[in-house]
Image 1 (cartoon, rainbow, N blue to C red):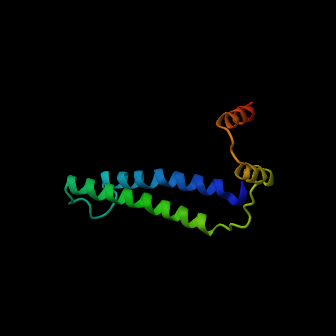
Image 2: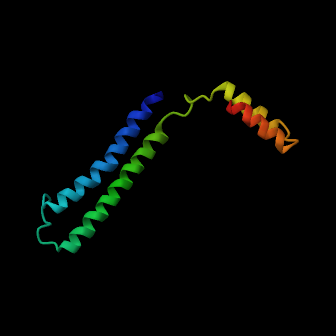
Image 3: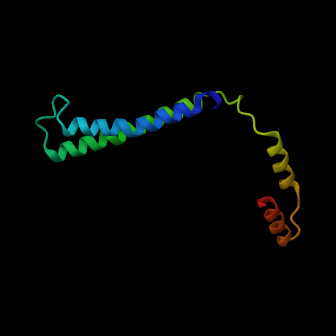
Length: 107
């Protein structure tokens, strides 16, 4: 799990669920000060807007963490690179030949 990518993903994914639900719960159960005198319509709009904004903030934070991760430690598989270069440089002569090759690879 190179560099803790999976834990970062799991934390971001769980925050994308927990934070909006917590915001909606707090607004609907009057847990925040100053929302007692809001109309139900305004309460729904404000809580929904803040929930959507919170998801976008979590996504932006995850993107920031992904961009901060060093890119030099990710090395592609040399065997895969060799096969990819060979398949790109190989000319395609017949459509039937390509399908036969793909069938052989599937077996």
